[in-house]
Image (cartoon, rainbow, N blue to C red; front, side, top):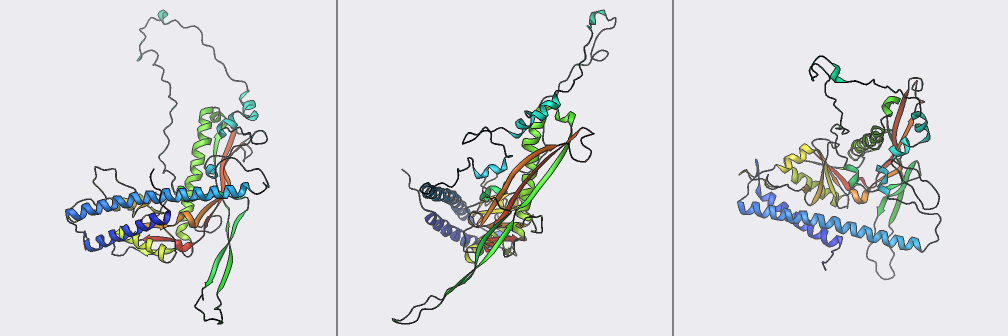
Length: 421
């Protein structure tokens, strides 16, 4: 049976190995990059592999610790009288369009939105309209005097296959690194400790105790809405498979892509979210003359030293990650592994999220697991109506998608941008 180590034990070993690797890079640094012997380079690559393995082990230890905490909470909840029946499903279901519950109690009949729409009475009644039927008279090609061929006669029938090639869009990844939950409120309100005066000191027998102070400030993050709609004619909606694909995939993807941009770059001015880049109090580390990996390590140090947090991930533009992945020694040897290897999407043991939602030349690192959270008041909803503008008299439908959410960054100092990379 393999031993499962604690989060603190794994983190301690990871920090020690990262610090040792930083010393090697510092000694090998030159004006043009890094100068390393073959033995040193092999040692760096071996250490980097160990760091990556420890990073994965740390993530698993965190997941196990979180599972244990949730189990303990479940036991405590079970020992209290239930105020209401719990809802079925997982918190991350907000990424799927919400679906109604049929029946009472715990019985749930779940169907896709496309199925619910195309099976609705309204849609079926619309489909029952009179359809044009055309009967062709019998046709005998033998009665023709001219030779039948594709050039002078009938061209061969070509049927369009059912496959649709969708336009290239980025894969949503940002919210995968941020915990999420639900809320029934229009804003997420919490208390932040803004004064911590520690005057704890030694006291002689019978002496006075030193007075300390704590103060708290109420903070609030408003739930915002992300929405879009797509017009379509009644004739277009007659294609049932197209309708289901449209509702279940593309509109929901449009909302998710905008959500990603807001999570990172929202300016906080209503109706925008306050994204990580624009959060007041977030730390900054300039690259300066440092190699990019060094700048990220210094940002991690700021998160630990000033924010008293442990970074869990890095965000950066794919072009910036490319520069790191292609780093070479002065002899032309790749530091992050041979081009023949798949390579690792990790830096200093932490996962790298390379996405075009990030601002190019600006990286971001921080403790996303403990000090940020997405609150969903409403998952992605799909609605269809012909009441928009003159759509009713023109035989058009408006298909709209929206969701409501709030991003809460509990401790700004637990995050740091890396500029000039």
